[in-house]
Length: 315
Length: 263
Picture 1: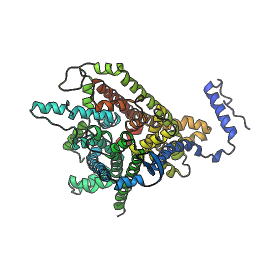
Picture 2: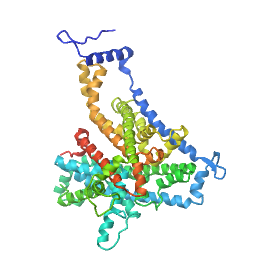
Picture 3: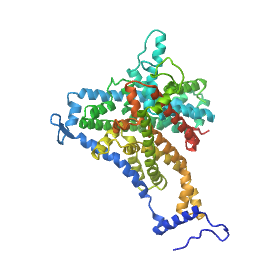
Picture 4: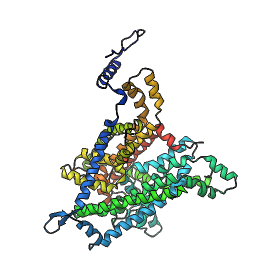
């Protein structure tokens, strides 16, 4: 084994402790691997696989639990069965569950459309900001609502539209009382307030990649601004629009806090119903079944959105 | 360009509207009196005093910070190793493994939370802060992975080759060339995971017990009953953390290339 020479003949000082430690480490690693050329990096990825396996095992347990039947009177576990799913789809409360999923999907759709439509021009405007200071301010305004957490956002909204909030106070001055808390509009407002910045952020790389020369070219050829938008910017931003729609839609489907607080829990949503099944009603089997249905729903949604996005780019 | 004065006005108005709740929380946190209400009673720091003197909320805050630290401690080494293996050294099956690691983002948060609840119940680990941090990391792991990945993208492999032609061992190259190169991504990922963990609500609601609540869960309780001044103060603290984080992030070059337009 060759000895490592630490310092050349010209070096007068003896190497410091840091370099000695480094040489020791190198020596140790050298000793082990005779075939350094083909050392695979596989071991590096094992911990992360184990980490996510925790979630995967949990999901497996969830699905397993959903296929158990439980006699509600004696609380005895039955064998594997589709009882829970039968309960969901054809049981006495089936219409409630169906309506809940429908409602969640409609809200998700509306919020996604709103957020993405607002995000396209906003992303465009922000990437076009020339001065660094204004860009940083825009980033601040965009990111802080996102990073401060849902509960703080909810507090903010309650302060605006709640009984003792700003809107109520202002409207009382004029003689009437605005009651927005508990309304569908309030839920939509709360959701859009975070989904819009998120959509903008997801879309920015795609918008950034659109060369301004294309717009100039179109303008010089006599295109009106709205034509440049529809014919050039939006089509080129398609991957970004797709990504933003995916992220916002999947996040909206699992929305819990806004329907619960801003909607005062009046309207059942998927996440609130699942939480209720698990915690209030203690029915983990039915809860698991509903969770599994939501999971399949969201996956299908993702597939549809991706499919819709890919199709036209072929032609 | 296309966005004239009108466009800029609309954009900035939108951004300000989105920041309205933030503004209100900050303003209210400096208010007076016990309940949060308008018109304003006066300016004071009572809210923040209440926040630190009330045991329940202060302990919840400490628990949240702990969860945040645990989360970064878990996510950083695992994420760094995985990002290097997948994006720099490109092990076999990288695309498939990457897709698997994105499981946390692919499943709805409520479903992940319930799945982990069932699993933790089986192994008897409910109400444990470290396990909560672990759960949060599984659902936010893609953040760390992709943040470091974006740094790796910008890494020039020629620098590492140059180092080895000058006699550096693999370990030296790693410590002095590779690691500093991915540092921005590591910092970004760590900051994002930390902030996500301390503000995380849904999984925390599912996996904590009444004696072990983190701050967002406590705030949820206040939202359901009545909001006190100290809740606004908690919001103010969260907002402060978020602002510091964004300012830190703007210092990292990784984000610059994200935001600036090619001219």
